[in-house]
Image (cartoon, rainbow over all chains, first blue to last red; front, side, top):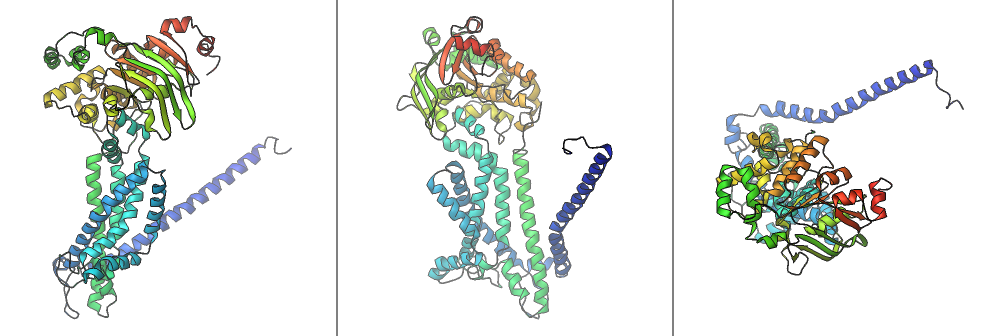
Length: 299
Length: 292
């Protein structure tokens, strides 16, 4: 019965005060959580800058690695090698991932799509070293040598499911009405898919693809026995190629102070590289496709 | 049908000078060298049309005739199949999963469901505007207007293309609002402007039939009025079929009104007759707000 009775004014103000206290408390809690979520990034960045800035100099970017005991030396071949590997990986991973994602979005209900989606999820959950072994078995062993191609292939394998699922999600976000408008206007099905649906979803897909590139840029395990690494300058696709993560790994686990300092520098360069790639590509996307994902302004 | 005789060349020259006026003269004549007889013939007719979603029949043996150059409104309660019927005319219905169509739809005397029909060609000859504005976000305003021309591979010179863009935007009343920003993003327009852009896009390839699926359902009264005025102005050039929830709208813009209920056509009559003296009791019940 008391529940039905109107609360007195005192009860009401008390309840209000309690709600307000609880509200402020929860605000502080989520605020702290939000802060904590970015703390690791800030710590890592600070650590890298402090540790890596010491070795950074113009020659660090232009010089090849120096032997232990010799001061100086750089990661020029590692930067170039990483870019080559990312290029190969993108050439393999992007078209396949994009096509697969488009297929999953457009024919999502077929049995094949269900199987592909499931296997793609399995692939993205596969430890990256296993992908490296696969590339070794498939390319390195038959060809008899480590190669940039094998490394790029391994990274590409990792990219495929990332790009595919992101593409599928972005394409699904495009309203059916938009596709119908294209069909009604006389677009063939594939043209409406490519010119309307895919292009509308493109900003999201590009962002996702960049995340995929950034993700594989730091992969070390799949490169250990594919790209293998080299202290020399090489851009040949059929030879071992240097890569920043491999250099960082080699330097960081070495017993030489010089090299360990270089590892910090390499890590800083790697992070900067990933950052630059995403900033450039994002800017390109934004200038071309503007507020493509924005909604209509009200009247 | 007025303005059917000017030769295409003259009309085209005229289009350079006064695009907005000339375009109206051009559209029926340049389509083909249709004689008066062809144009006065039945433009759209559905015969014993059944449309299904899975096992559910949304339209049941609907036989309707749409008078050329006139505006026909299809009214009826939600789920009566009026949108589905509309989407059968340009064969859009079948693009949905598990959708099937039986029967025939004649556009200009040709059954669009006949074997060997080029679906894309059918859709290109029929304009379609959906309930919610659907400008292509990946294109700017100009590209949206000419999207239908581009996809049909219609090659026109740069200046003529510009003329067409201006003419069709003039007609839809958008020119003054967007002429200085044809290169900008269509998503920056208001909802009403977006819908008029979609109408412009549908009209640019000069279709002979225009299908409007509740074109003002998502718009405010001001934008609704502008669209209605446009539909009124198109009378005589395009056979317009408008599906609407809004009975006042049907009364305002249409010459003929068809009333549908549970997938079936109940009656079709000149709008004034249908609204004042419906022959079927169910029509009267619906019009007087007794159900639906």
